[in-house]
Length: 80
Image (cartoon, rainbow, N blue to C red; front, side, top):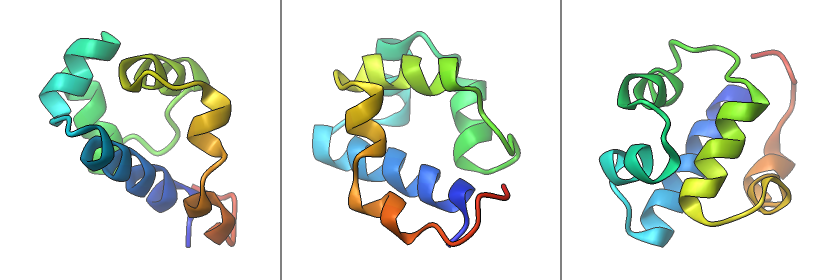
């Protein structure tokens, strides 16, 4: 599984877990909705760590918690 796919899967899983819509995540994280949608639809190939960090703030978790998840054990290649 590619890193980009895993990233989107993690965001979607956290949205379900936290019962958040993309809109609520965008608002809570101060990441513009268009930016979030470009990450989720994979038109942004390599979102920056600062953006992921802001999403983590919106979820109320640390970057470590974000990346310390079973989804990331499935990454075969780091190429996005």
